[in-house]
Amino acid sequence: MNATERGRWGETLAAIHLETAGIQILERNWRKGRFEIDLIGRLANTWVFVEVKVRKFGYAETAFESIDLYKQQRIISAADRFLKHQERQSDAIRFDILCIEYGHENHRIQHIEDAFICMP
Image 1: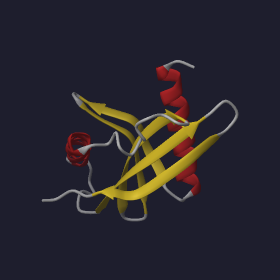
Image 2: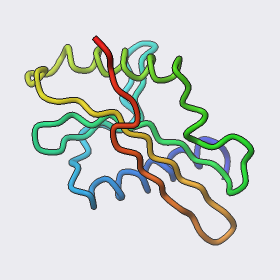
Image 3: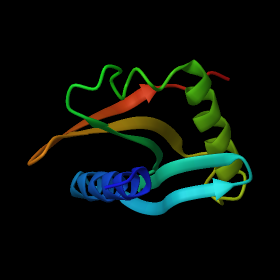
């Protein structure tokens, strides 16, 4: 599996996991110019923006460690751009990270809700 296939596989697993948790997936791989968000969903009156990371078991840097402050700011900027074109801009916003670690025969999903916040 190459990097593109691995990313698609991870985002599909992530979407299934989120849908099972009651989140309606509205967008996958949303892009606008230099802005990008892996998954965008809704849970009641909350927008859920999700960064998906896929790593092999035992990878030196965890998926969560790879979401540094710079990456968080890029996701927040992308969410802001997305919301400018939505009717329900005033609803709550949540930023999640979903990590999928995999091996030869299995995988593990870790989902952190409200992984980081947007400061005004």
